[in-house]
Image 1: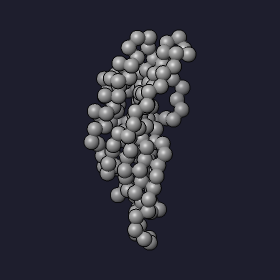
Image 2: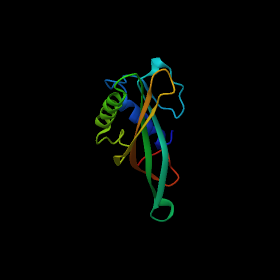
Image 3: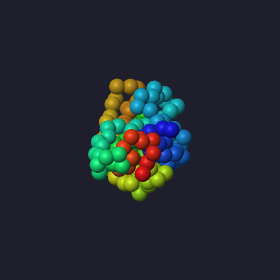
Image 4: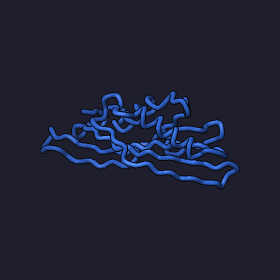
Length: 146
């Protein structure tokens, strides 16, 4: 069985597939070579995580706070900011108050970061929405959410 981190990433991908701007162009990968035909798209990553052991002994649980990063990527000559803002609005609406298939106890938007580059023939923009996902596992069973 897969780690709950992977289950959360996959649940987010399911919720984000089919949005108006990105459609099926949703990739669960930290590194993905993007072609023009892949854009605009969403890249989904599970990044840093902080864990706290709750309770003593063999019946203890882990409270886990995971960073779920959704990168909205677009490449276009005009209205790049508008496109990124539209993509962010779609992501925030789709994730809303979700529990990610019952894996998460809480999902909260923590930050949004915008990066732009004009090194290519068309400007590229990346808007990263970072969500904090709180979930629990029993100590020693990282593949089962409590």
